[in-house]
Amino acid sequence: MRAFDEIDYGMLIIDAQGRILHANHLGRHELANGRIVMSYGNSLLGSNASLTAQIQQAMESSFRGQRKLLMLTEGDKELSLAFTPLSHPLEADAPSVLVMMSRQNVCDNLAVRMFARSLNLSPSEESVLLGLCRGWQIAEIAKSHSVAESTIRSQIKTLREKANAPSIRRLLHRINSLPPVVPALRIITPMPHNATEFSHP
Figure 1 (tube, helix red, strand yellow):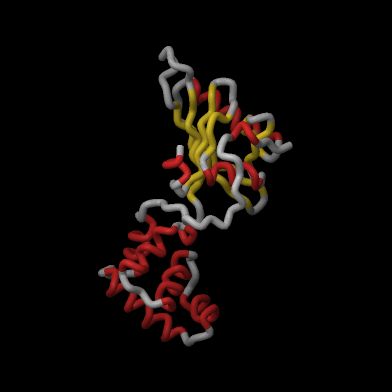
Figure 2 (tube, rainbow, N blue to C red; figure 1 turned 90 degrees about the vertical axis):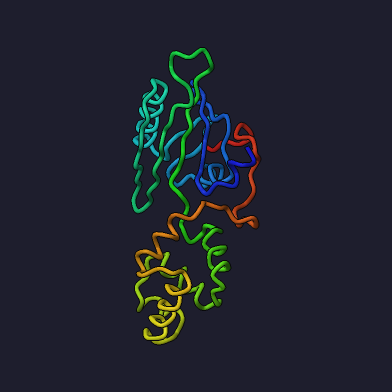
C-alpha cells in the first residue's frame, strides 16, 4: 500500500459492492477535491448524476471481466479512469477492480526535477525545461523569465545537448517516459490512509 502512494497516478481498489477498499495518496486527493469524482458512503461517485451513471456502468462491465476506459468531463475539467478487473468473474476469490486515474501534470512529477539534476542543469535551464513540459511556446517562456526569445532558444539548445536529444520533441518524449514519482514533500493536505475513514456528500 505504501508503494501505491509513491505512484503518480490516483489508484482505487473497489469490491463487488462498489465499496472503496483502498485509495492511494493521489486517489484520496482526487476524491477529496471532488471536482469530477468523490467518495460518498465509501462508494465511488461522480460529481453529478451523469458522471455517476458512467462510472457505475464501467464498474459493472469490469466485474464481468471487461476492461473499460472512461473520459470524464465537466466544463473545463477532465479526468480519465481506467477500470481493470483484478480477478476473473468465475474465480472463487472475492472480485475487485482497480481504478487508475489520469496521471498528474507531468511538471509535478518529481522525476522531472531528478532528470534535471542528473543532467546538471542550471536553475534557469531547469525552469525552461519545466516551461516546455507545460507546453509553453518559446515566447511564453521568454516572457515568464523576462528575457529575450534568443536567450531561451540558446538554453533549449544547451538542454538538448546535455540530454543528447536531437530535437525538442525527442527531449519531451524522454520526459514523458520518466517513471512517475510523487514528491516526498507533498503540498497536498494529508488525509487518512484508509479510504473508509472519509466520505463526501
